[in-house]
Length: 380
Image (cartoon, rainbow, N blue to C red; front, side, top):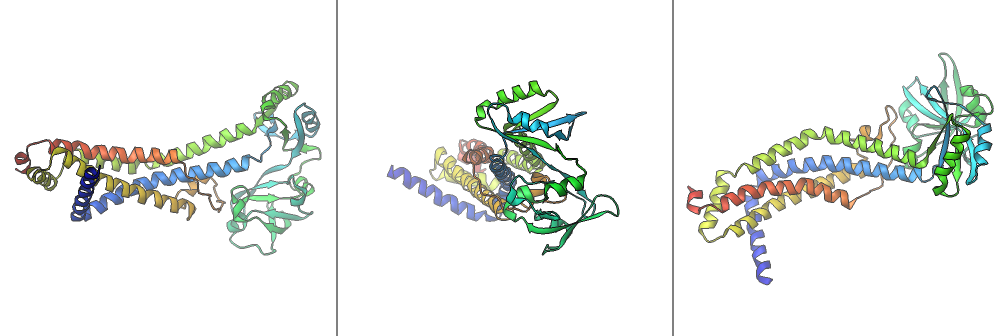
């Protein structure tokens, strides 16, 4: 064992010296390799962090949402449904919600306007709570300034801003405007007794399917959306956006594939001559292959560490500035919020296998062919 360790240390010393002799080429090689890994790891980290944040938000979402459809589109639902849904066995409570979207012609953004469920979060008449993205979109900081919303040209409704949500909740509140119920109904012209949808809390999650079955028989015109349905929709959305980034990274992957193919096509004359000299002074084929595997391993590991650490810093320290517009998906108001670091060992292992292993294989093929040849023929 001691002899084997001494042999490996000698091979490592020689490998480092060989890398130093061709430092320019190796630095360029590591930079290209690290760039490819950086792109893929950034998309992986960002999508994973968004999935985690979405999971935390959905954990507090109601188990069941009831919507009324008219001509295939969501329509206002009668408040009488609330009592009927709440009376189903297994449902611990049901309530109507008021929410909608408002297009602001001033900054070209869509706001999400809601009446909060929590009475402590409900503002007084004429007052609103807003997300931090709204003042950013309008180009100034709120300090007690009123919020003017225009429903039609020449029509301005004034609200007093009493609070602006911070960055920590920006994923859900960046474009949010909270009103009380009376202001909401007046602003959107919604009659009393009508709601956007109805939410229900279920005591036992295993009974959700049975509750939906019962409610569907009583109200076939309604649509029932479970929390699991919403979670799967978000999962598919993030998978699609992550796949879009992977497709955009095709150019980088293609460049890497071309490089790997060039590497596998053969060694340079200098490298082949070096191998011939080593064989002539007594190195066997196994020693030469081990030395070159050390060399390829150092390059691949250095590129992987640099690319992964750069991707980690890009996503979790700089909020993924390069990919945020693609993965977050907002058109005008992009939420500015810190992402919680989420490292998936399986994803990192998969990334390493998809990048390091092909490179090592591309290194091994030409080395084995040259190392097994006659030293005199190789040097000539």
